[in-house]
Length: 292
Ligand SMILES: Cc1cc2nc3c(=O)[nH]c(=O)nc-3n(C[C@H](O)[C@H](O)[C@H](O)COP(=O)(O)OP(=O)(O)OC[C@H]3O[C@@H](n4cnc5c(N)ncnc54)[C@H](O)[C@@H]3O)c2cc1C
Image 1 (cartoon, rainbow, N blue to C red):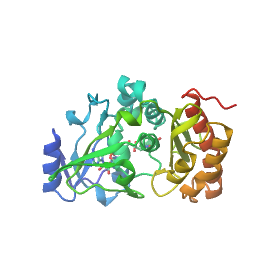
Image 2: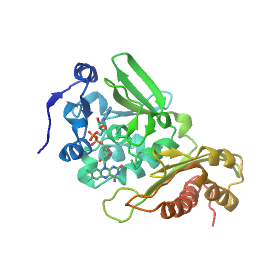
Image 3: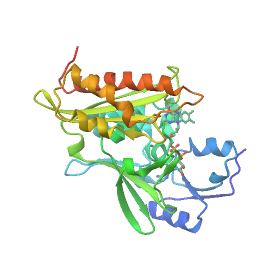
């Protein structure tokens, strides 16, 4: 049984914002794959709901004239992975989307819910972080945009004011044109499982040197994290084994993995080091640089 005290269904974003403003205790429910699990365990924070599941304007994936890719927060992971705009231009996000749950979960779970729940294990987060994605929110005061890394504030905590809805994620063309990427989820079993560590890498090459490198990890700290210091150290390096060694030797300095019932800190550190090299190597390969 679910302890739902109030339920309101919105047909538009503005209606959802009005309903959230009128019901300050209410939270949005999109696919419900997190919210209903929490309600099932009698979490009191989810007893008042504003349903945005059928808000059509949140379900579009478009490309603006300047090449910016705009993904509605209500797009589910099946539709995301099948979108030609996404699969052709930002396949690293398809890798993240395809690794989530099983087909039934992916048919309803939304990208907006995956990011808004603030989970360090969100599989969409590392790919979106290496794509420099920006979040767009709309509330009673209008729109605001911020980089995804600033949206995350702590475990389960994001920069969303009550009354606000995440409308979309935006990826600028300069953040994917010329870039290649790869996402790998390490989980304890091959079947449906939450990541023990998720790692995404993206790179841009100029001649034989790194013109840009981005690395992001899930479950390696209180929020999904970018490896800013490592990225800076790698900038301008020759794209060879020395670069992979530099990166794998540096990433732990950017991260804060911990012990949990799922895996020990030591084990996570081992996986992080291994994945950083393996995932970057594949991203480089997709940019025409093979390191044997
Ligand atoms: C069996 C199972 C397997 C799973 N496996 C994975 C997995 O492998 N990887 C993974 O990352 N996750 C996994 N999940 C977690 C979950 O499916 C995802 O996080 C999913 O993307 C959440 O999206 P949703 O639309 O269902 O969110 P909901 O449950 O509807 O909402 C989640 C949170 O986001 C908020 N929210 C939703 N949409 C918006 C919006 N537009 N604006 C503001 N706030 C919003 C809600 O208020 C709530 O706090 C799994 C869940 C289940 C039940």
